[in-house]
Picture 1 (tube, helix red, strand yellow):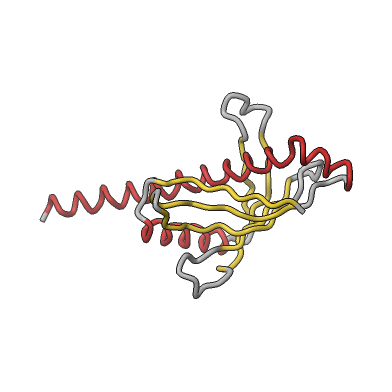
Picture 2: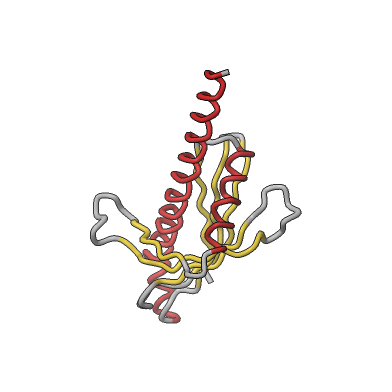
Length: 159
């Protein structure tokens, strides 16, 4: 089993980012069909370096924890050599600012040969895939925050 943990700073205050992540995940969980997401590992090679996954979220792992981590699972469409991933996604407050973090694990396919491939390149691809998902979610959170800030500013100007 291989562990992956990726983080990125996002341009949104912590409390708002945590609320937006909760809202986004609860909306996704309310859908009857799983989300199909294309995770692009490289913008330069977008047409060939991507993975289509079925993305599912689960309830908050520990709803009493301040950071509110949510369960996340993806499985590649069409099977192949890409593993399934189980982990958690959370917004954290850090000295750098607001962080969006995705941590979890996967089992490399193909047994022992797959473990060797994972050591050489697979774990790097897993990290890039996790960052691709974080980028998608970070953009949505930042867009929600921008829209909310613009609406608040417009309301203040009218008052």
